[in-house]
Length: 277
Image 1 (cartoon, rainbow, N blue to C red):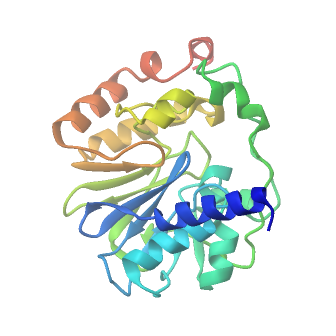
Image 2: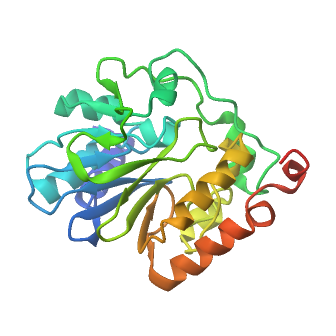
């Protein structure tokens, strides 16, 4: 083994050793895949857990390791996708191949995860940060999860998640969904709103908490995105676990989410897009 290969193996072993979900509630935890979160729903050691989103590519082994530490060898009952962007489905196929479990997504996202339709290319003119500039080069090609993918039922009830309900939150993508549990007002937002300025690479790696609109470079319907944020704000969530950034809760979450909902055009929509909004 040469020095480079040894370094790569040592680096991978370090990451595997540190692949561990961070607990938010006793049955909600998240693991960050470089720039995007995957979410574990189910108490530690549970046999009936579900994975929400699959992060970027090449993270399947680390996600499996985090799952192993939390649930032993028990595979999830299913994978739920909030939408089909590359940073949420990147490891989906390898995870489904390994666990042999179904994947669910909103019917309006099906074409994007069955190889039939591309997402629009990222918009480099928004946000002003490195990730926004790089966004035209982010993958937009459709993945093909046909072997495992199923549409979420029209009644909005999620298989294997009786306490959670689907909230259709379009704007970032046509079939984007969020998940909400009424009993404790826990919200999983996907990218409907996030808690980091995703356009900026510095903000992403520092992970300073603040409620922001959806990642601007991949959001193509700002009218729908605004309505979705307002819909989620009306739920008055006590805890929000987002697709990017750290979880937020209580008064800080309420104040900033309500502010975003009331002032969405000023706070979230890129200035040159306001003319179209």
